[in-house]
Length: 425
Image 1 (cartoon, rainbow, N blue to C red):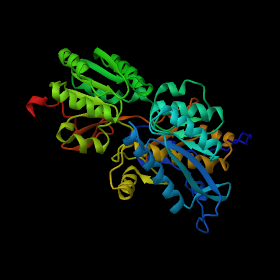
Image 2: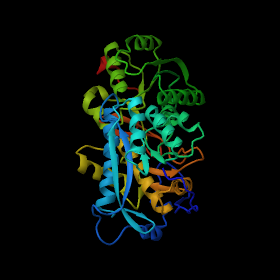
Image 3: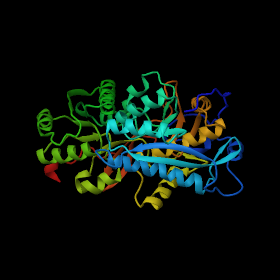
Image 4: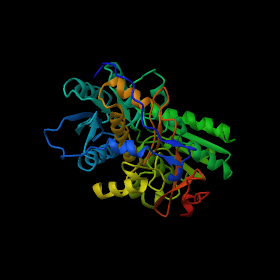
């Protein structure tokens, strides 16, 4: 909510000789000495320590409850680490205790708007961490922009978020239009010539579908059908019956976790067996494998992050280190939604220390100048607030395990192509 100007602070940069999905640490150059200088030292934080107050409305309930739970866990992991291990946030030489004010937005547009205003005007938070989904992020960011509050988010990927001329919205994740790129390229390399697309009629899934069309055109795959469905859909039988008759090589589904479950259950029931199912949200989440069991086998998924990737940072360590920490704290392996939520909080933290201030102008400058690599991947924002540095990957579920199959430089397993038809399993 601060509106005073502040001298631009040059952000500590990390220069990579190349930005690739697997970035060997040998090519990274952190300004380690200067980073360590920002580390809080001295007496432990207490209840009387000054506070950086952060607001976060997340989906504890409603249709995004699974992803919302991962979002909350991701923020909580960073919060516990920064206070208990890092020593707090160094704001211009003074160590501050981090505090996150959480509310349940119930996966509801009106609720998230009300809570965002509550966080700003009643709780008087300094900054905002974003909710889950592009739709809720769109609403939240309109309010933070109006009130001149910085919001860093990791769960709103729709390109439309970044076409409004906002200056206070920063997203650490790869935009939605790129979710299917490596998967479609791999399918084409394995001989796919035709495809169908199903997507929810909401901003994120629409961006995914539009991106998929682009990547299919570039890779010589014909789109036989492209159909949307409403939010909270419970029956896609008619759509999938039509898809079965078209007999495509590839199915692309743009939606969220519940949609992924519905897609696979319906496909099995109808005997719809393309060579591959590529679904944007769900398959890369360990919970999907647990719920679907053997029916999850061979399914492809888009992923922002996996623990096998080799990115690392001086804060939380490597991707594998993060996964180990998360599993120990929450008892489950992290989804990419959890990782990108932690990354959003970490990026906000690093920006505050670089700026030496909680003033909006200073934080904006620090974020605009940011060029770092984290356990989640490289972070470098363009003028719209998109992270232009981090690519996507594609996973496949093989023998109950989630493994990266594309792009080639990141793959840990060969693709199983084509998937075994339902009636042959």
